[in-house]
Length: 81
Image (cartoon, rainbow, N blue to C red; front, side, top):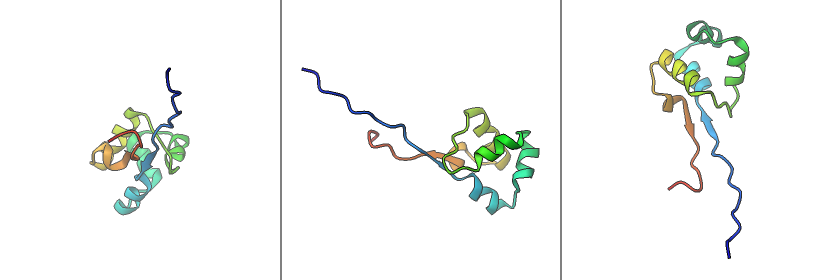
């Protein structure tokens, strides 16, 4: 008999972008100018659970001259070892 599978939720994302911008003295407006991202998109990136596309994450990381993993990181998942 097959055991019933339990539902798993996707791991959350840790968003370090607001902190990195503060530390570097970069405003959200300046980030928008450098990345060419529209204000509405930047507003969503301020949220703690922001989960941008890889293309957007790479663009922002390039502007900050850091790896993407320094800006966003997956929370530890209960099913990952």
